[in-house]
Length: 578
Image (cartoon, rainbow, N blue to C red):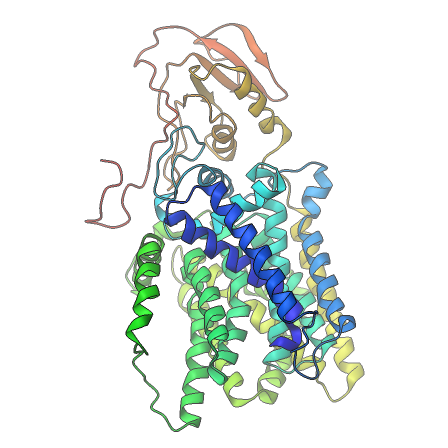
């Protein structure tokens, strides 16, 4: 893999820093000290590595290593893909959170919480006062998120869009490497595959709305498949460590995506063991008892996120039962996405042209690939088809339908692009790829054109109001119980908050229910509350702050502490808050 060494630097750095910060955080090292250790150690190791084997590519790179001219193409494409994902923010003209993914406020709040607290702690002074119970496995990626914000000198809400765009660009680099390493694509065939994946409507939807956990899972998937292929063929310590690192972050960030790279890895390993005349099944064993000296401490440090992975896997495994209700697994989706979206096709007319081309390219790529790659990647395609057929007819099945195809679709598109690039008539392959890129571009344009900010300036203005009010001033939020209330709670985290109608029937923590408070914050689309007195104390762009009558019924139950909707993950589980 050293021939494309430069393309591995940023992805390996992202994965390494997330795991390093997690290990230090679970060892109870304060966040800022942990960040300083990671940065200093990374610089030191980088200098040592450069002095030991200077150059990019390094002097020890194998013959035929990629030239700078060749590597410039995927690097420039990655920058363009990241910039395209940021177009909704550029259009708005200010730094904010874009899209309508309802988890974004939790993602921002969790990163902010981990900048000041350990993963298992509780801090009512923060907008999100603990790592959400259903995200118990995810602190590694949110520690990394918080570190990016700290290094940038900005608040987490101001970096999430750019960070998500960077992640989707790194994922596109992973598919370029997959096309080159496993499918034998030429540089321009791999570039076409990268462009198609980078403009894929569903992948842009995932990044820009932003589904942050899923985006991290998407980034790790292509790199894990490439690493699995090389580790099976030439098992080096470094290769095994890299594969374990990428799979580890994937498991922590998004356990639902684990079957995709693991399925390929199992097939690759099966063919390799058969080629060597070994049994297909092998029970892993310790080579030496000395390995326990690092395995046991590592397991103990990561036992909490590992427990979260097992809980999430066990909970999602129950959905395979035919009679199991999926009503609680809808997430913030409320419909099925057409299957063509996952191939980057926006409308039915474009599908009539694109789907046959993709099918032809897929068939050619699999036919010309080695037997191991053909079955390893083909198994993932079959897995995606079976998931679509199983969940499509089921009520509320859109969540798992979306998640499965969002990971399989880019792999199908990558293989199709490689297959078309290898057509016997070069001009036909070029025409087919240009047509596919044009159709995919239309889907990307529609997704970007319908995406706007979810944290407008009117809500950001509440941060200044939070600074002006005394910390003990309680505020009742009179606004629609949806995204605006969630973000208002984040912006006003320094005050005790409440609402008469908080956001219920979700897994999100919400503000307490109370009528009485010192003040009431009113959306200007609503009338002045009848229990408010006098003129507005503060008139903002969209909101007005009034004083409330004293001694309202029920008493002031506002609090900086959030009310948990989910207190345990499964029947018989431990209540995190009795």
